[in-house]
Image (cartoon, rainbow, N blue to C red; front, side, top):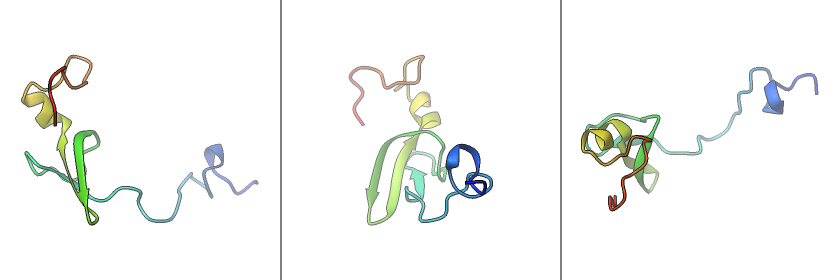
Length: 74
């Protein structure tokens, strides 16, 4: 097991090869590609859209903790 990286996640450096678990995503409001944090993902035939947290926050949909406010449905 000497070749395994941190936490046994693969060889040297913890990189795992293979297909990416999520498709490329783009924000439906601003067009940002692959935002790190997003809400309301929709994936159809390998293409994904979402709403990035910056856009959700700008529209007043999030509380101070970053969760959707009660009654907001996306």
